[in-house]
Amino acid sequence: MTEAIPKLAWKGVTKRFDGRAVLDGLDLSVAPGKSLVIIGGSGQGKSVTIKTALGLMRPEAGKIELDGKNVVGLSEGARRKLFSRVGVLFQGAALFDSLTVWENVAFRLINADGVPRKEARERAIEALDQVRLAPAVADRFPSELSGGMQKRAGLARAVVARPEILFFDEPTTGLDPITAAAINQLISDQVRRLGSTAVSITHDLASAQTIGDEIAMLHDGRIIWRGPAAELRTTGNPYVRQFVEGRAEGPISHAV
Amino acid sequence: MAEAEAARRVANPIQVLGRSTLAAVRMVGSVGVFAVRGVAAALTPPWFLSQLWRQIVAIGFFSLPVVGLTAVFTGAALALNIFTGGGRFNAEQVMPQIVALGITRELGPVLAALMLAGRVSAAIAAEIGAMRATEQIDAMRTLSTDPFRYLVGPRLLAGVLMLPLLTAVADTIGVAGGWLVATRVLEFSPTIYIRNTLDFLQAWDVVSGLIKAAVFGFIVALMGCYHGYNASGGARGVGRATTHAVVSSAILIFASDYLLTTFFTHAAQ
Image 1: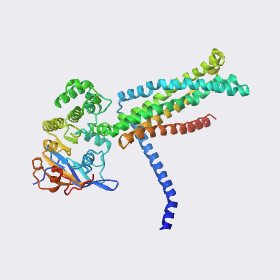
Image 2: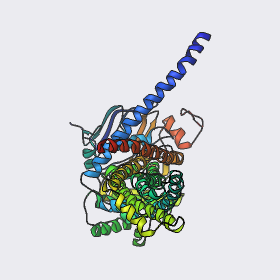
Image 3: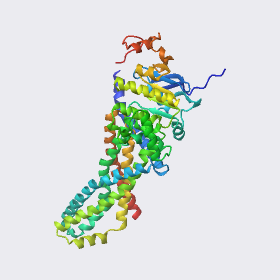
Image 4: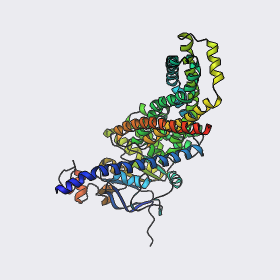
């Protein structure tokens, strides 16, 4: 029996900063249509994991495969084509300050896909509606929105072109619990609606369990535990237990 | 131990020199590669015309007041200085010609460029640096849009196109500043002043200044883009990028001014 090709896979990926290996032979994969959440402490390489997959950082060793094809070292042109299949929600939403909300959401449609502005605006407003932002928000600038609204607009921008893979970088950081819960639900709804493969990183456990089908824990540059989202709070893995219980004592040494 | 320490001290200045030289070479290479990528993005499609227009307005139109004011006061002060200095060997009457020559060949392009270095290069570095710090440049790449084409190319083109126009305005206003002082304070005849200026000036005096301005415009935009694009370290990094953009623009403007003047002088002989 042949094993199904994962949608995305990191194979022996190593990334160093100033001689320190932040990713140390990382092996991780996510199946098509599944949602994987990577958890772990600060500075453990969660963001680097996503950035290597996006080509925003180049690993020193290893392969990153999309549909079985290595994407490390792709040319800028090939990378741009690849990005047409990808949507990303950045930690701070990363909306363009100088553009209105609808222009942000329609940025890819207008600048990369050549969609006429009128049609792009209609699609942007539709995407805003899906993340429960009123059409009146469309003509505002990002600085006029709250943190939660910025995240929603960022989510609308990530999903507007119906990507095959979605990346979420700390989607609930800096939000109050109610807004965070709403964002988690929206992410979960959008991933299911599009049938996309999703990779998220977070240290918010509620977020991880809402968004993820599976959860993997990254520590010292490697995956030390992986399992269904429902098992996060019941696993006997001492690293996961310490992380879930938020204890200072345990196998995870504290850098504070 | 003492010998090793002494050797380390002797080696230190050499190490420092070596490190500085390597850093300088690395910097030149890095700016060179950035400039080539920027020029390629500016000259080949797809072009983001709305971005180009936005930069033309920001760099050209909104710099008019500061360039105009600088030119009028410089022209007026130049007229007074040349009149006083020329008086020492009875050459006051050539003041209009020298003001025109000084403004069109040297002060118009250099002062307009320095004003742009302060106003535009700093603004470009701050804007692109803040975009880098808040992951907007990464976001742009993931939206299948090349930041060099969207951010760098339009700014380089706008710098090269707008500074010559601003310099033409500075030339006119600078000469007018000299005329104002000459006719109101120094009792020159208005018509004779203008006739002397126009009869004396050659097309090349103006054109050489405009060519210089195009080069300076490229430098101002390039330094702003380069330092902003490579900013790191949050708000402090953005501040540092802004300072580096202004200082490096100013130094490169003076250095390239000398080189271009030397080249033009030899070419004319």
